Amino acid sequence: MRISEAAELLGVSDDTVRRWIDDGRLSRVPGTGPLSVRGADVAALMRVNAPELPHLRVSARNRFDGIVTRVERDGVMALVELQCGPHRVISLMSREAADDLGLKPGVRASASIKSTNVVIEKDQLDK
Image (cartoon, rainbow, N blue to C red):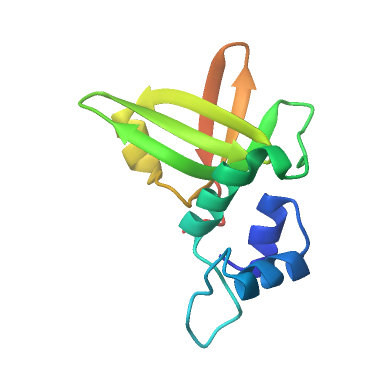
């Protein structure tokens, strides 16, 4: 995940993410491309620091963009947890749906909420 993507999810500046890499709070992904961090590391940081993170954008359609922090699968169902800025969103869905979306910690996703139903949609930019 690029620094700018991690910064957007964490609600901080690119420079703050770079400082967190220097401080050891996040690990840099080695390689020759642009500076990047692992999505799973961002998810872990968000989960631990959620109350301290600034509020991220929320649309009028009750859509929360975030990152998957936990997936628990059993025979038929899956529990999917997203950290969306300071908000933790949990959805119960079929295991097949979670598998089809490739949901796992570190994957960017969005939660659309209507009444008591939470629908998870994988971010198109996450591969």
